[in-house]
Length: 198
Length: 198
DNA sequence: TTTAAGTAAATAAACATTTACTTATTATTG
DNA sequence: CAATAATAAGTAAATGTTTATTTACTTAAA
Image (cartoon, rainbow over all chains, first blue to last red):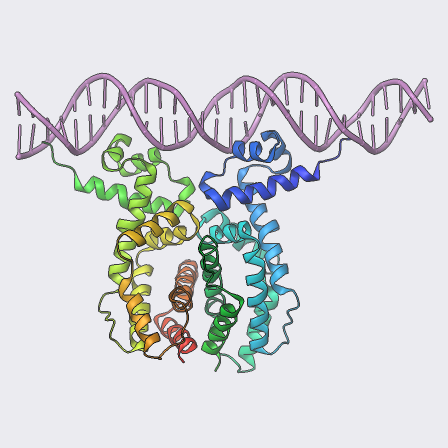
């Protein structure tokens, strides 16, 4: 049996993400992707059931899983609150600024009904994405360190600005001066932490 | 000369936003829109140059302009900082929770390269969207009330969580309990304010 | 009567997916 | 231990459908 060509599989994945990042989800077509990846359209259908399957797997298996791994690197649920949040911010910023296509798909995940639904289903099935962050926050509520608000509310307060700042980072890559520096990220992280401490 | 039918113009706009909110930008087609709005495809082309023009005008003229107007209602640049931010949050939440299609397109604006580019161009041309907010923040930096960070950074810290919370609000409209209440919004607003005060 | 607004149906291009074929391996045989 | 049968991986080109946009005509009001 002829073995599958791993380089082609990789090309399909990375080029799909590139097209989505540069031209948007609405401009990714199977034929364009095949041509850009240097494969036949049929090859994509050997690896994915259809376009929807490709997009969902790309989002869940490639992007979110890698993002989760990167963000949790060296993080521990038992860290002091401010230290833990800083770790997550620095990991998140470091990963996203070096993986623009992944960041783009994460942004699409917030607006695309397809990806949104896929994420929610996966999040229910597979236990939970970012489960250690959940435990971390719940423990700090219990310990009386931070305000007692629903988890999703605290998640929004703590991490929504980070994604916006990454967006700003990429807006400034074309400009002479980068305003989103590591120092700015650290300052912002301190600000969001301060906001929810009791 | 036959006068244009304003109801049909309105139908095209609102139904386009509905389709985008329910099925995503990638599933809006001119023929589907025409059928759903009860007009001929040609009618859309009388009012818009092409699909791109339709999307950009919807985003800029209908959605962003209305959002700006709603958010600035009763807001004044000279308000005390905490009071001004609270006004913007309450206005923003009140508007978005009652205008899901607009909210959906605003979310798409962050990921779609087309809308993103359109927004930046419009923002440069027309002076500036949300200009009073810009003045408000800059004045409060100058007065030493809040941290001295670039405007876009402060904007992210102050308003990114609000959009995430609105998203959460809509996630909970199908569920038995709504966790994103006016009270939660006020508490969150206080938290982000506290974070950036000097 | 003039004229822009509107319609139904057509057009050409682009789309997701499939068909019919070829290729590169592994496992099996003589 | 070469030859080859079996088989999934791969390709180029085709398929039928959907798409954005246009054509040729009709309608409603100034």
